[in-house]
Structure formats: structure tokens, C-alpha cells
Length: 227
Length: 147
Length: 120
Image 1 (cartoon, rainbow over the protein chains, first blue to last red):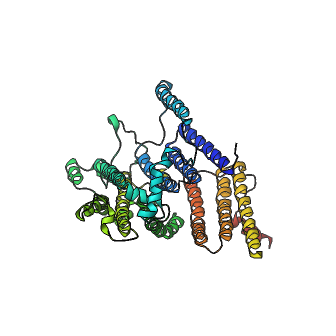
Image 2: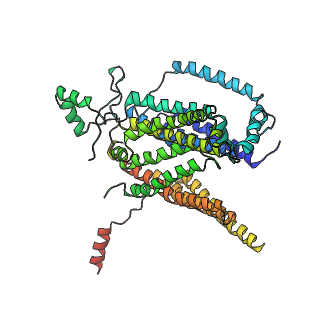
Image 3: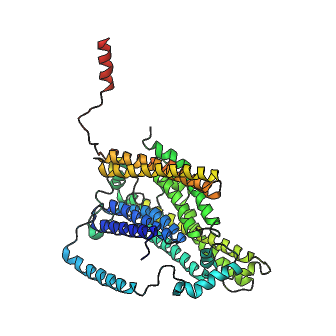
């Protein structure tokens, strides 16, 4: 077997990914979990670079490690800081699903083409055509951009609409301005976010105000003015 | 003195660089790795960094929510509008060669890709900011002691 | 020819010193007793080690566009790495994490001054 430094790098990165994944599963603190997910994204970005998928790595580093960590932190601040322990019985079903999927994937490894195989389905038919035609038809050095924006323009249009819908959905559910810290998550009437929104003076005042005034205020979207 | 003075000074230096890098990624996407998606996320992260360090109110003054709302839909419209424009010029949907049919080096394709990527940039950046604003505005600004 | 040898030697020296600092940082993170000392090992040596490695790569790239990009990365790391260390340490301090203290206590400046005055 051919032992190259890249092989050792890949094995090392995979080992680190597994360690981080197990740590995420075993952790209790949500803050640490969010941070570890950022670490996981960065590691997989490095791994993508070593597989020569620079565009994917770039996206993973920007989206997975950058923005989604911040968004998860923002979501975490609205809920609890710790994971509630789950009974062992409830874990059995998910464990079964994971084991079956894992075994199926390991079974499928045998059918995977070798890395960089020129005759694999991904490289042989339409991929080779795109690579060859980009030089002739689009005159762009980056084939990925040519495929993404021109040959597969419909797909990218769909992806853009998906992102638009995601933003739209969040806007419809939560609103752009929130209501400036007066909101608390109360599923089934339980105040699960007790430690999240420590009572501050202006909030206490706002809650003590008579009800008529409050509804009038709620009707107007509250934009926090500059202090 | 403000306890976060170092963070603020460094962030003031970094935020323009991050925004500039976003546009580099956007317009260099034809030649190297990058494109509208990555550039949009990087641009959004520059505003998010501003919001994290200077507070949500300041970020909303720099990038008002109304811009976010408009930009999100404007990007999709720009993408779809490019396709409609190729229709009007007599081609298929998103057939960019119609922009410059006689060009020998596929200038039409370049214009089409440029405009489409600009639409993607708009939508992605504004959608990320919208999600961040929606989550971030619900939490009141935490002071250091609350953690 | 001689220029290439000089380039190789200089970049090699930079890379080796960079690796030394990164390894020192790694050993420090594993061996040092508490959060602040580990932070010190990770933050300081990581900044220096990464800078050395990037400068070594810059020397190897010569006067090219790659070199310029590497310089920009080095500049960005020079700004962000110490700031990140500062932010993390500051957050820990605010959260009330006490540093692990040994037997040695730094003398109080006011007392030192008073002693000196008495001696004179």
C-alpha cells in the first residue's frame, strides 16, 4: 500500500473529527457544544482542502464555522444553557437507527470509486464534458463557477430561493426586531429561560405598567432607540 | 474606560477588511474559489461582528432592517430578472449568450454570471443578517456579569 | 543558484523556528496547570509560531502574488490571534475564574515603597 503524508494527514483529520463528534454527543453544556460544532466545521474544511475541494472548504469555513456558530449561540441564548439528561430507554431508538445507517454506509464503501478515479461516474460522463466545454464556451478558469452559475443555473436559482425562503420563514415567525428582550420561551407555560433574561430595570417597569398601555405599545413594533 | 477597548479598536480595523474580502471573493469567483454564496456569508459576518462588539442597536443603524428585508427579495428578483431578460432577448431562461451573441470570448456568459452572482450575494447576505437580527433582537444585550 | 540556496536556508530556518514555537505551545497547553497559563502558552506561542511559518512560506514563494496574499494572512493573524487570546482571558476573568497561585506572592508596591523609605 502506498503510504503518503497526505494519507496520514487524512487519517489524523478523520480521527480528530470523530473525537470532536463524540465530545459533542457527551457534552452537557450547550455553549461548549456550539463551540465544538464550530471546531468540527473547521476540521472538515481542512479535510476538504486536502481533498482538493477548495470551494466546498471555503463554504464550510464561512458558513459552518463562522455564521452558523453565531446563529446557534443566538438561538441558545433564547433557551437553556445545559442539556437536560435523557433517560436511557429513550436513547435506544435513535441508537438503532444510527447503527443501521452506519452498517449500511460501511457496506456501501465497497462500491465507492477510488479517490480521483477518472472513470468514476462523477468524473467520466457529464463532468468531463463540462470541464472540456467550459474552456470553449464560457472562457472561465474556474469550472465550479461556470457549472454553478451557467450550466446549472436553474439549480442555483432554486438554492437562492431556498435561502430566501429560510430567511422569510424566520422573519415571519420571529420578526426582524424581536420585541427587544421582553420575550421569553414558555413551552406549556413553563418558564424554561429563567436564567436567560435576568430582570433588568426597564423590563420590570414595562411589566408593571397597566395593561392598556402595554397593548398599545405592543401594537407598534418596538425599535430600540439609540441610548 | 471601556473594558472592551481592545476588541473595539481591533474590530474597527478588521470590519472594513472583512467586507472588502467579501467583495474580493465575489468578483474573483470567476478565477479562484469563491462566489456569491461565500461572499454573502462573509459580508454578513462582517456586520454580525459589528453587532457583537458594538451592540445590536448600532448594527441596525449601520444596516437597517428595512434594507435587509428589501435586499433579500432584491437578490432573488435580480437572479430571476436575468433569466427573464434572456427570455426577452429571444433565448431560453438563463441562456446568457443572448447578452452578447456575437462575442468571441463569451462576454454574454460573463455578464450573465456576474449578474446572477450579484443576486446570490444580495440574498445570502441579507438572509443571514435577517436570521441573526431575528434571533439577536429577542435577547436583550447581556452585560458581562450575566454570564 | 546561490540565491536559491539562501532562499532555502532562510525559509527553512523560519519554518523550523515556527514549528518549534507551535510545539512549545502544544506542550504548554498540555503541561501547564491552570487556564491562564495555558492561555498564555497557546496564545503567545501560537501567534509567533504561525507568523514564523507564514514568513518562511513567503520567503519560499519569492516576489509573487502568493507572497502578497501570505503577507495579508500574516497581518490578519497578527491582529486577530492576540485579540482572541485577550478576549478569552478577559471573559474568564470576568466570569470570576481565579488563577492558580503558587507560594510566591508578588510584593505589594505600596509596601515596598514604605520599606525603602524606612531603610533610608
